[in-house]
Image (cartoon, rainbow, N blue to C red; front, side):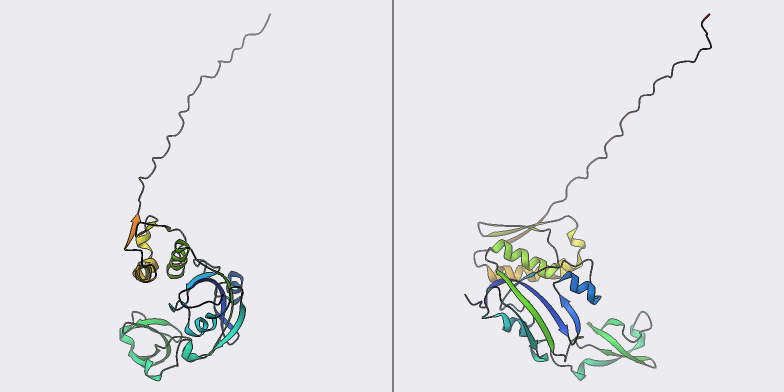
Length: 243
């Protein structure tokens, strides 16, 4: 059956800009291209078609395909990261930076992220366009399976948004409960994306009325006492000899 908007699928893909890979679900491709992130979880991703979890051009390519389909698609800028806009290139005073900016440095200024493309006197020229803006991209892909179970769908969204695979999920009586690992509040990526996750749960599962996030912190185990060593007296040596 042809895939349509609202379907969850497991997807493998590699994105290229020219000859360079900029994104991939394949660990070996990432290592070969020099973009490997040891903190990342590689492997197929779960996405919901129609929710823009992937760029528009790739999503359009997948809708209408069958599970098991493989292929390549060329995606123009307007269906990828947009055109490169001259208005997004700004001149920023060097005094706004903690350290002296240099060409190629990625910075945050005016509430946006950009890259320094030039430094002229006491001003830095910063490009706030997406690094791939204005570029035609090429994606190779494979649709591995359709994901039907809500728990597996939500697990896929958690991995997609936060990269985590250690969150337990149960759905019962209108409540989706997430069992969170201890100290997850120190995970910045999780804290940024958890609101989006909750919103998508409510949007996609009409029978879920509450989302409960439960973090359990267990009492630290007491260190085991070292076994008691009982010293025994060594037998006294004698100088007696038999007569």
